[in-house]
Image 1: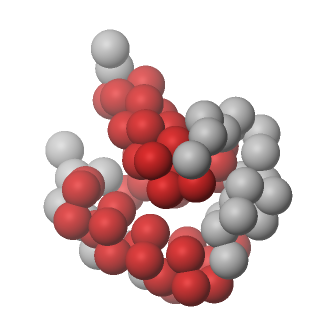
Image 2 (image 1 turned 120 degrees about the vertical axis):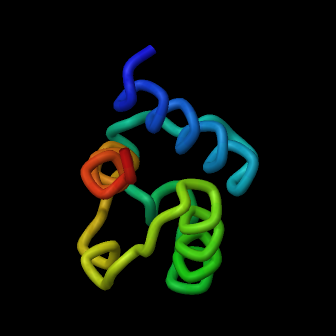
Length: 77
């Protein structure tokens, strides 16, 4: 499994636990129930999980796929 697939699997697993159902890559975060409060909690958890600092660009992420891409691009090697 390459890094992108690993990141994708971790994000899907995390969001599944957070929202109670398995999201699809093309689902919007708003559609699966990620509001501003959930986004703040998710940001904190993802920083811990991926050992990275998440910047304000996370606020431009609208879909599960964009979230995976965002994290993958910033993930430490």
